[in-house]
Length: 345
Image (cartoon, rainbow, N blue to C red):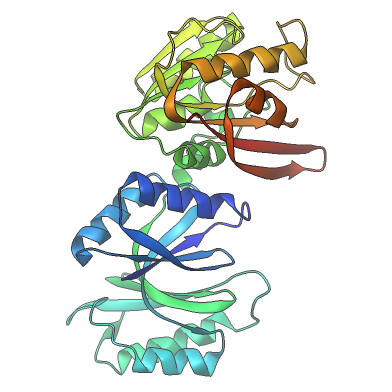
């Protein structure tokens, strides 16, 4: 059965990687069917009701996604072709007798100039002729048209509550310190790391605990290390406010007070030296020693995700990591983040 993830446009690669990582965490038997701009379509094997339930669980942890759809059809993005496709497509797996529906269309960037409202009306008419009643305000089933390089038509089975991430914006937490990652980015990286509820996640530069909070909210136990006492106190306030399972340590990331291979994953945003207080001899020493320590405490077959303004490949490779993937995130004109996904064999 085909399912589609309607992805956000926050990054060209990270939303897709996040969705695929969550499918892996859930242990689903899938293959990638096609990838359009802001739309990932996968073919998932299994009993439909169970797959739907698993995808709803995945939606609860996704950040860079809007909706998950059960796909009814895919066709060229042309109004007549879309209408004909809907006319000829069975929707019995999407709506049952007596249920009401509404149709919503979403244009992705510049891929089409179709009038969304007119298309919603035409497609809605096609569904009406199949014997179903529309309800524009409180429909039982929402049919969605994702208008990208192709049109993906289906019914929404889950929607992502993106407002929950806005409620956890840095300035809305009990303790705020500028320069931290936004919650959606932190959650997406947590998902890309493949973190499960039984895992222990470590951040050797935890700051105000933005990374740890997102890992904790999906059930992981977290350990944070921070050299600045004031900031560590703020991290404690934030984590207690959201009631996550956590432990915090004041200390130096160059000399981590943990035993070898005791954490399942690492997600961290080290200081870059421009605005952060550096306790090490130099930024080079800080990165060199901290990467060695990260490698030491990370369990074998574990993942480390490091966010930095500077390239970290040399430090990662020297420490023993395998570089799985690298992403570039342009925040604004003067800030570009480099995100390295590292693996310990």
